[in-house]
Image 1 (cartoon, rainbow, N blue to C red):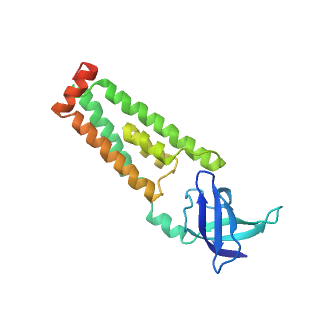
Image 2 (cartoon, rainbow, N blue to C red):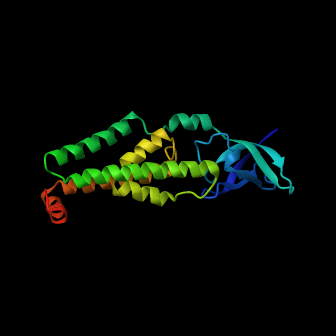
Image 3 (tube, rainbow, N blue to C red):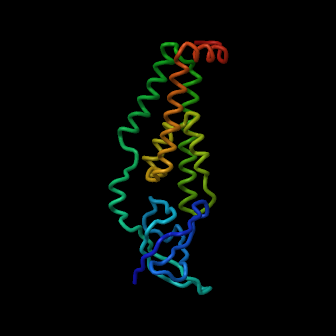
Length: 204
């Protein structure tokens, strides 16, 4: 028999929480492993349906948990598509061209590539931790990786790993970090920014 309720408590870093059944009653324990759709992370007030079991200590526990309206929401919220990946590739190409024509030092391109690789690894690690319900990487850390220059790698990871691509609050902050980083690069291409790079690297 399936029941319906709302997730009224969720600890994302630990991968568990509690469901309050519709109509009231005892709260039901929910673990990330009991959720059918592993591509979506629960948040507070998510409406779910579930099967009810009792563990060895007599506590109510949910199994085969599904989000109400999950299919519809998946259609509306897609992972970063070809357009986003194309943007990342075009950005790195622009940086490479700027290096080639002497507008930027080679170290800038190397920094972006290194940050992108490190960011991809951070996403992969967090994805693995989520599946194993072990210690997670803080979202703020992932945003810092993106802000300093790793956002192209983050876009690749979001699409390839399908991780953090459907959480709207995360995506909003992520694209702010992308914008800020692009603005920084634009400033470095201006005369004032070029003087800063020249003082650091002795070139440009």
